[in-house]
Amino acid sequence: MTPTTPVTIPTEELRERLEAVMGCTILDLRRQPSPYRSTFPLEELRIRIDDGLHVELMLKDVGPQSNPIKPGFVYDPQREIAVYTRVLAEARLGTARCYAGVADAAQARYWLVLEKVPGVELYQVGDLTVWQAAARWLAQLHGRELPPGDVPLLRHTSSFYTEFMRRALAQARGRGPADALAWLAERHEAVAHRLLNLPCTFIHGEFYASNVLVHTLPDVSVRICPIDWEMAAVGPGLMDLAALTAGLWSADARRALAEAYLDTNGFRGTEDDFWIALDCCRLQLAVQWLGWSPGWQAPEPHRHDWLAEALSAAERLGL
Image 1 (cartoon, rainbow, N blue to C red):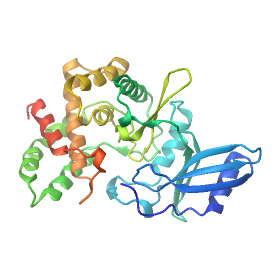
Image 2 (tube, rainbow, N blue to C red; image 1 turned 90 degrees about the vertical axis):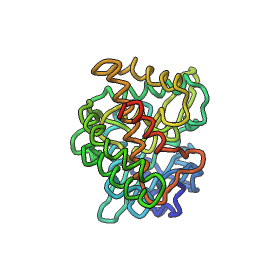
Image 3 (cartoon, rainbow, N blue to C red; image 1 turned 135 degrees about the vertical axis):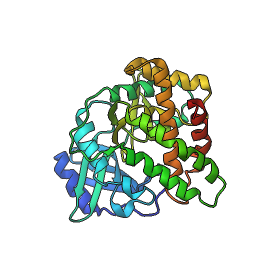
Image 4 (spheres, rainbow, N blue to C red; image 1 turned 120 degrees about the vertical axis):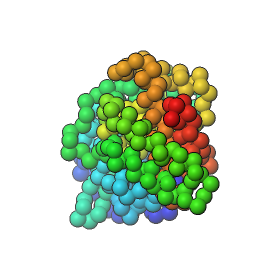
């Protein structure tokens, strides 16, 4: 997913914006492409300010010229900027500090400067207790009030769910999975109906382990820091839990992660209702990847058989 388009922000514009928000003179600003994989161009910044302090930051260009793979109907260059500047800035959830967020429609400039968070991506961590900490963090996020209505979040509506199934069917025509997807499509409306009846909250939208940084602090606590809020939405919280537990987990490990979430957040309904709702979210999440972008494939370490995931969830749901 490493973008081929470079960050297009001129250095002088970047310097002026940062000096304005930081209230200091930048004596030196150095930029280099980031090795971190993302759907948008990223640069690492190292700045030296007037008191001699060095600060390391990340520059992310989310403008339309930098969107290589996101389906057009879910893309909004203002979304992640608004989430960082208007939602996360006051939430005290341990997310990356936002130093600057620019949404300039007249010049088609959309970019963020964020704290360069130390640590590693969650998928590199083998300790299940750290993953459980991420599940509990997620439960705390879902327990908060919804952001203001004018924050341009995605909305998990009936059309949102069915559009991904339509795209998945279109991309499967003439290929092996078409019959299995057609079978799934006939049952998808019932799944979407269940999803639409779940409580809605503010969700990350792509809470995969590759989008969560973890950093062990000096007091031995763990900082959980989700990044890449491009798909932030109002929708069922269990969509995020489905993303966290996607992949080649054992049944026991998946259950341990889900129970860490459930113990922190609770659920409106019986325990059986919880597991049914989670499987509906897992199925929908798989459909979204099947209908993502024609010809797109995740990097090798993150590839997954999403059709098998969807069919497995369908079997557990008795569809």
